[in-house]
Image (cartoon, rainbow, N blue to C red; front, side):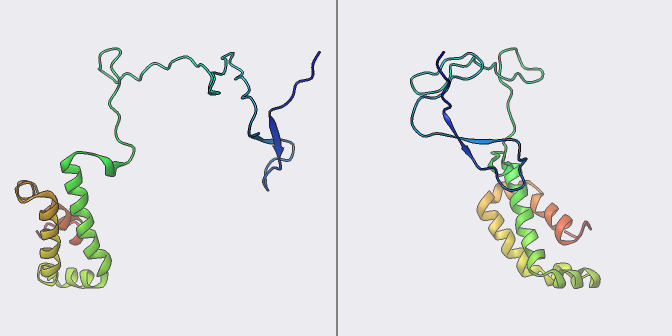
Length: 156
């Protein structure tokens, strides 16, 4: 019987790791070991694994893959979502850069007057990015002003 040669080299365990469990790193060069599932490595070293069936969405016809939500919401292609995010970001910047000014204006009831210029500049930026027709057809910027700048009060 021929002894089995390991294709991995032991690597010291990191601090805090269980001392009785060895950690192994693959050796560079040499053949790739066959997976334990019985598949054989191909010429490139990857195993021939069975194909995975696509995920079927609820209510979708069998064999039709489900449409997945983007992992990163910033990559969504929905113009309404993009416009809402932009409006909220622009209004949030006003609050983030001048929190005391906002708090004082809220207490005195002069929020519209005090933030008139900042609101105007932010709305112009909003128009440039989403377009005048879209901006005027939605309330995303107004909603962001009411929710974020005025703290939930319907001032705009």
